[in-house]
Figure: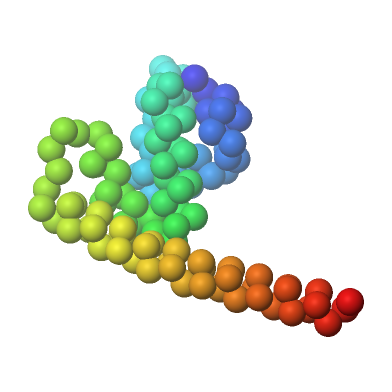
Length: 115
C-alpha cells in the first residue's frame, strides 16, 4: 500500500510516517520510481510505535525495542529494556490513578459545596 493509505488505515499523518522513516522505525519498500510501499503489517507496526510514543518512550528506545516484534529471538538486553519500560509505565499508571482519584474527590467536594 502507498503512504497515504497507510496513514489513513493507521490513523496518523503522512508526515508522521515520514518521521518514522527518518528515525528508522519504519522502513518502506520502494517502487522503481522511488515511491514508498508498505505491507499490511505496517499498520500494526505504526500503531505500536504510536502507543510507545504515547507512553513516553523516545524514538531511540523505540528503535531498540522494535526488533522484538520482528524476530523470534530477543536478547537479554532487549528483555531488560522491556522490563524497565514496563516498570516505568506501571509506576506512571499508579501515579495517574492516584491523581484521578484525587480529582474525583475534588469534584465531589465542589459539587457538595454547590448544593
